[in-house]
Image (cartoon, rainbow, N blue to C red):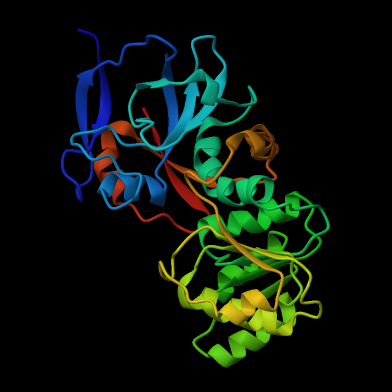
Length: 317
């Protein structure tokens, strides 16, 4: 029997173990590919924990929700989605879902960057009618995905990019990455609201990685200060780092052209997302995260590593 080495989740809440399993068999519409690099993203860990809405219901299973693979014809591709089982030497893919990658792309950089950058890239392509020249607020810009959102918005031609987060040091890096203005989300809610009203009152799109109380404060401050309340404000809920619920005053919706939507698994038509364009941006260096490479054999130790800002652990079989 042909075998492969893989990571295996044997109990929810525990790190995966390095195991030898029966090799998957290609058949029907599926294609067997070699896995080159897999990012250990927060959502990867969340799905594997059993707490995410996309978590599988049965144990054991091979984790991994995306990765860079080599197809039988030698070409590189990015594959992703819950249940991708990419933390293995080989995996099965649906060729229709494979995103072609440039031949010269660094697989580790692509694996580190595609997932964190996709959240903003997809939102600005497939969730809102974003156009170059429009102004963008990134709420929660000091996390990895939020910092990527600053770069993505700038790369896609935003007129102004406002970055808002708690860490002043990371906000200074946002400025270096293309933000025009920054807002420190401080415990002083009055000062924070005033800063948001001053810098972000007339943005066209808000990419929200925080939700919770920061979203409540930001929505209230911004819609109150808008100079044209009929100007559309697309508020896109992407992450919930500050809480899973937010209370938005109904008056804010009735008295402003405020549209709130979510962007995540199940809400996106990926055909509109132009992921090859993102791959090209990564290959060019316009959008990139530094990979911290670890071996699949060391998956248990790597699983618990806390990445530094601007870094993403990448597993290579």
